[in-house]
Length: 391
Image (cartoon, rainbow, N blue to C red; front, side, top):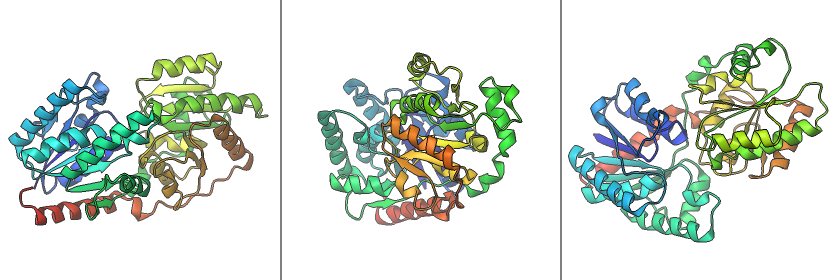
């Protein structure tokens, strides 16, 4: 089977990890191709670099120059044509599109070019904070695009119900497949002391290695608006202004993104330079998770975050906002949920955690394993091919 996976951005993120993991798995018995949108920085090609390391052929990896995240009629038309030509050239049986922009433009181009179209929702774009007019526009184009899809995959029950509410998800043409991780990766996670030493060195506090203080609150997230890092910064000030501790609590965010400058200014404005750190992108960040005393996910929009699955695998406590499919994770693990966009609620939850020091965790269940996700996806591909030898 020839499979083309397309995603708008190629930087490190949950959706990109989904594309990489499934492509690597499927390439054992299929001819797999990957295409990403426009690149402007080395980090934008993360997916293609990792795909090469996973032994995908260089000639099977493509960049669609006109495919960008922002709405741009001229570029969007060009992206449609570029994808149409690419599909005609490689003739994939299935084109699997990820992210809202690729889901609409690339999915339509692929269908017209003669391929079956599978769309994975990693959180609908209209779930993000925006005007009613903008949300209505995105709902409309998702609705129109849904007629050209052979299957829609959601990574959470939350998004499946949202898609059904707006008639974006078609009856008998959808399935829920949770993101999954390799449970065997637990053996790669470093012991607490070793991970803690790495983190402290990264933030310039290596001299504190080997001590029990300070306590570290951490997260792993791209520096985008939807990740809610500004609320974590605000909560850090509240916590350290009011918490009666002999040592301050440190806050560390592993990740990179367009808001670095703005967030750095916010840290300085709140006089948090000595306790709030942005050390940048950390490869394989999950192996250092046990160096955090508490993990936080302050997002204002999510699909089904890999980060929390890795946190459960590392067996560390977490606080997360009640958005997307996060509450579904809490059916299987102990953590605290808080409202999104509320720094005070986040600060209170952090304070409560360090007051009670609860560490109850459970083993990551098979439903969140990559083995389970791959099995379900392969079955869906086979079903599509049985129904449509040529879509």
